Image (tube, rainbow, N blue to C red; front, side, top):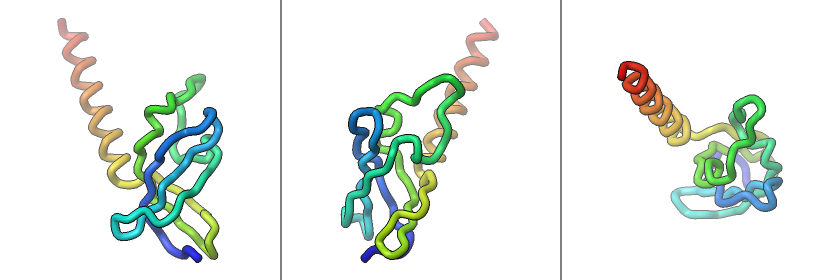
Length: 99
């Protein structure tokens, strides 16, 4: 029975409704969990659905208690990647507005 905090990676989204998450311990996949897509951490921009490809590969921090997934949060790698992409977008948009 799984207890504690584990790393996870969104492997795929099935039928736009269910996310399949690979649960890792010590770099090895030890379990697979499924959750409704709307339960994934983070927010979609208002009025927009996040495309499946932006969900795939997301790194998560998963907490299990008595074998049940009780919480999820974006892992550090996901936050860093999103911040890097936002910084790049900001730089590009600034350059375009200056031309």
